[in-house]
Length: 367
Image (cartoon, rainbow, N blue to C red; front, side, top):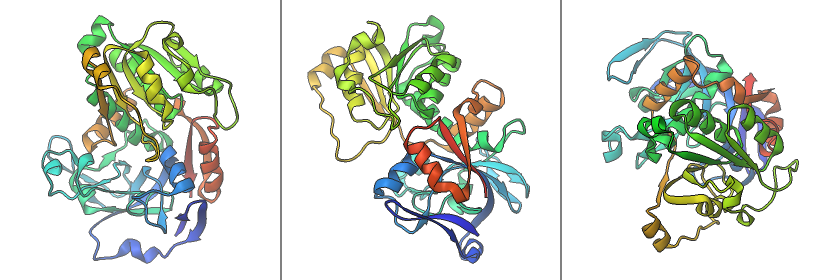
């Protein structure tokens, strides 16, 4: 089959991969034909610098919409089973949990001590076909795609589920939304930031501020309902701009924020978040950052201002199911996030477009 194989930093090749390994009878699981696979910022970071979870050669790509090759029995959120018929479209949770640790026993599969992931630990979706391991099927990691969602939209159900997980850990509830008492600030104007924007407005009706560095993305945030937008510094083709550390509460017009979501890997974002936090603020570190970057924290600031800091990573199949429902019923419009489409043979151009912040989400949908 045709696949984009990662051999190391800046070494990504279009290869013909031996198809036989997909049919290895020693490996239980199922096979999907890939219909669409989105390019995540994580894929770009791996392409540039590698990652401790990624051992080359490997096929990246974890935001997948695929088609079941043969009937497969899977689990749904109420614990019952269902049969996915051959030809069914599915969104994929990339989790491969051990099913034996304390977190797996509590269905917190994203926190599995021995977690592996499709597109990181094993071959992913930048290929014509992808093998889904048995552990993934047992936890309900294949989610039926509603008929009214396109393949491209379905590929974005995985990042939407991750954003839902972030809101879950923030603890923003509908009672606060009814009072319209919370101000949500989203630091990061990329596709993930704009998914958070939609959730903040649609699910919680919160006053929402989007803060970023790229003019066309900030304009998109305005058109998608942001109450306030903040453009930091000057827009550049590489996505650069002014240093977040130079800005303070004035950037939010003196409002400050009750909830702050850091949806960017820029380490300066945390210092910025501290400056716009008010008493009782909750800060969610949604994005991963380089291990070479450290944040400073005054424990007395946390204590006397009653600040809460949370992290969130990936999601669970249950959240992926909820994401599918939200997109299907029109509460979240995933089509607004998609701006570029490429063939798999143009994977390097797709990686470059993502890394240089052209548009929003890039989809590989021609194999």
